[in-house]
Image (cartoon, rainbow, N blue to C red; front, side):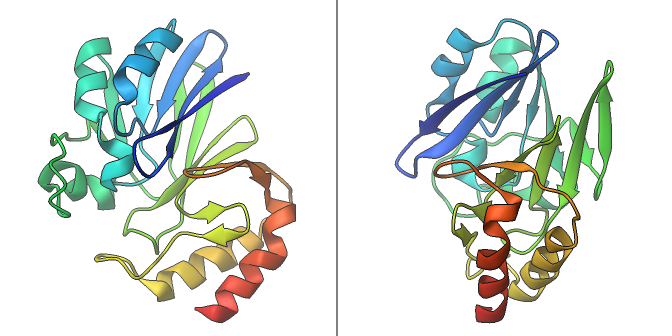
Length: 197
């Protein structure tokens, strides 16, 4: 498996291209992502959104139309793609596939699991591919996603932290911002953040 990473826009939002068995998955195409994606994919299969915030989905429509790809988005966040609720001037897009809670999708033998971790947004999810977790704005190295935004919910974030802490395995985490980490490295931080909330 290959993973390419490029921070995009003012918020340095990580756009990922994950290549498995000659298939490329584009995760969170943010501001200005289109040209980088075009240069770095060979056989693009799908656009996967971890959640609906503008800095993660800004280039959804452009990349989708350019490469003729379907957009997969957690169902609770699709409204953010369509209505630009933060009035940032984002080109609206809409999901072709509304992903259900904890749904696993099979792309010709490649399993992609959307783990439902609401709190930062109503549909916030982390996408697992081959024991790598693309956590969006749920978990960062040493931190978690903010839950004081419109549509955020601290009580749901606490439940999401409990849910991931219940996992009895380690996994590599690729966040929506900043460097990669692992679940085992973040366990103490997550417990501390949970108590803070």
